[in-house]
Image (cartoon, rainbow, N blue to C red; front, side):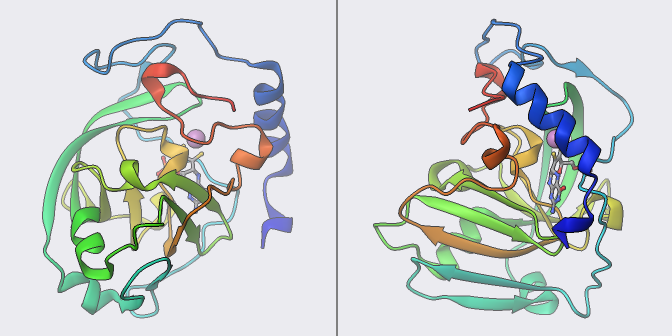
Length: 214
Ligand SMILES: Nc1nc2c(c(=O)[nH]1)N[C@H]1C(S)=C(S)[C@@H](COP(=O)(O)O)O[C@H]1N2
Ligand SMILES: [Mo]
C-alpha cells in the first residue's frame, strides 16, 4: 500500500528533516501550553499518506503482541468491553499546528497494559496501522495517564479521515506518534524507527523540546 502514498509530501517532509526546517532553537517547559514554533488552529487538519483505509467496526481488530505475558487480539466489541474513559487534551503536529481542547473517548493505554502485562524487557511500543504506517514510542510515554486508544472525538465516532474506528492519542508528543487506523501494538526491547523516523524524524518527538528531527 505504501507505494501509492503521496510521494511529494513525503519528499518535502523528508527534506525538512534534512535541513532542520521549522526549528526555532527555543525550548519551553511543558507548563507552557503552546510549544515553541507552534501556532494554534481552530480547524482540524488531516495529515496522512494519501491512503485512508476503509475500516469498519465490524472488521476492525487490534492485535497486541511481542514482549507481553498475555498477547491478545481484540475485536471492536471486546475493545468496547474494556473500561471506557473520557479525556480532554491538545494536539501538536510537527508541521506547526496545534489544536486545543479535544474531547476523546476510548480505552486508556493503562487499561490495555493491565490486560496484556508487558514483560520487564519491554521498553518500546511499535504501532502498526491499516494503511501500512508505523511509528515507535517509548513504553513510558505510551503508558502516560493522558494516553488513550480513542474511538470518539467531540462525542462522535472518529471519522475515517482522522483514523476511525480507533486511533492512538498521545498528547505529550507530536501527533505523528499517534497512529490512525490502529491495528497492531508490538512490545519490543530495542527501539525501531517507524515510517517518519526512518525519514529523519525524531525517535521520541517531544514538542516542548522541539524534537522534530532525529
Ligand atoms: N496510520 C497513520 N497514522 C498517522 C499518519 C498516517 O499517515 N497514517 N499520519 C500522522 C501524522 S504526521 C499526523 S500529524 C497525524 C494527523 O492526524 P489527523 O489527520 O487526524 O490530524 O496522524 C499521524 N498518524
Ligand atoms: Mo504530522
